[in-house]
Length: 300
Image 1 (cartoon, one colour):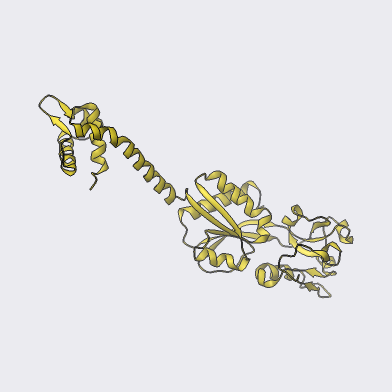
Image 2 (tube, one colour):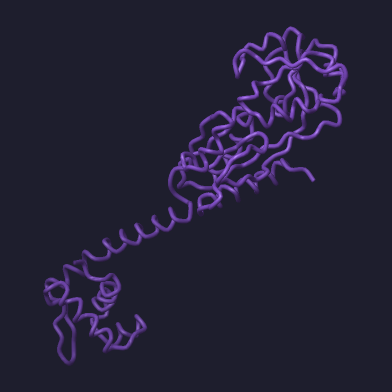
């Protein structure tokens, strides 16, 4: 069995001083206590480390070898302790973030970049996921955190408001309504409205469709054939409008633009964390809070 590291560190002080009185004073313990420690250390190692007499202390061959080899071993051990403490504090390891596609336009990349820049020891991985899968994945530990659009239901998690954005519509640049800086909800409802499949994000689907529930005549909703339609021919041709958050304004495909809807409530993005947070989760939360403040994601 290896000796305790405290006795080993005391021995190194004594090996430099070669005097029990001075070594005990440097360590801050009584001389008899230091002598007892050294005797116990020698017993544990099964060999003499010191030659003592009434006037001097000298190292044996084994003592000299230990005095030479112990410092790098202790330094390595100190690094191991530091690594363990850093990991326990959430400063090391692999961080897995799941995000909905709608959060990939700016919200998720900004948070990932902040976590990487502020935590050099963390390996951060982000993966797009179907929105209904994110909260369960956080709850059962498959991912460490999630970013969702809308306040998604889920057990075993806590949700923190991360960002608010205006609601508007995507539409063709040549569409008549594109001439207006803001569009009335009733005017938008006069055209077929393109909504994502409700199964992909029930909370957002319901929020967007509810915007038009009081318009007359009732709006006509269309759902694309695939959940993430890259062609968007109906929008480009001016046949439909697509309710969308403000992030769409910065990621417009050619031929499309975005206009806000007047008096519409905001869309929300939430950070999803386990209900019982670890130091790593608290670090994610702190980074998200700072980022939201700096980028004005939560205007007063």
